[in-house]
Amino acid sequence: MTEEAFITNISASLQKQAEIAYSIKIDNAHIPFYHVPFDFFCEEYTTLWKKYNLALFRSLQLYIRYLKQLLAWKEVLPKANSDAAPTLTMDYLHPVFRSICDIPTTFKDQLLRAATKLSRVSTGDFELISWKHEDRSKKWPKEMERATLADVDLLPLCELVTEDLYESDTAKHFADLHGRFMHDAHPTLLEGMGDARQDSIGAIVYCSEEPLALNAELEALFRHLPLLSRSYQAFNEYAHSKYQLLPHRINLENTTRTS
Image 1 (cartoon, helix red, strand yellow):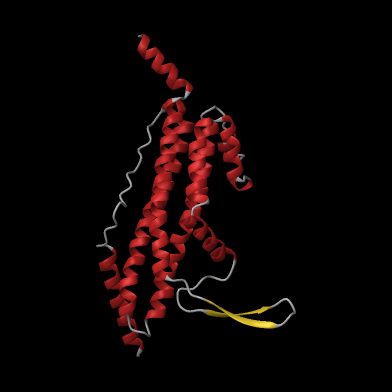
Image 2: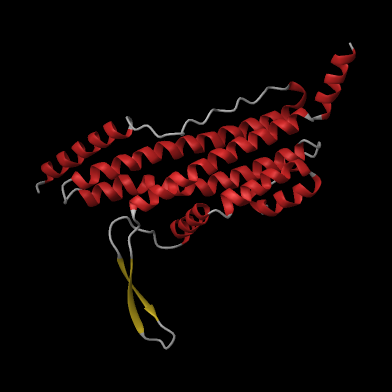
């Protein structure tokens, strides 16, 4: 294939992929954005809530957009020229795949920080949002567990996060992929790679790692989507319930009733 023909083939595949991706409709993928109230008298709480609510929602938006991109590539790649297919996979499909597989881990970490900080701020403790505080120094799963000891309202959300975002099969799968993407050789969507290892007596043996199966990965991504959506909703329900119980709001409501 000439260079000009190769570029033409790549361009045609990209155009076809875009046409398919932006016409795809995913069932039950509409996730309403939660509108956080503005409250001048507790700006620390509502500002923090808005920040993490927006971050979590944008992560969900990206997850759905990338899912559509992968579905489109699943349809386009088998029809692509054999010379162009590896380039399309590694230059266009693989970066999207890597990004979407990292979202569950990022989403979980952000939700842990958000819920734990809101729990503390709702009691008037602003240590975790102080400019002196460093998020990276905290082990947030332990911080959230510790927060539930003083905040029983946080326990249902903590249990849901543990069940859906830690212990579910899809959560473990994406956590494993995150570890391999970040700390090991990247999994491939192309073909198995030979790998040399030493056995217990020092002999060199060769093994082959199977490539990631796009169909199976898409199934896992679809199974995990409702878990992320449910966690987003549960986080905002928790944040709203704590907001309703803030001391200044209770005093304001009591004053309104008696006036």
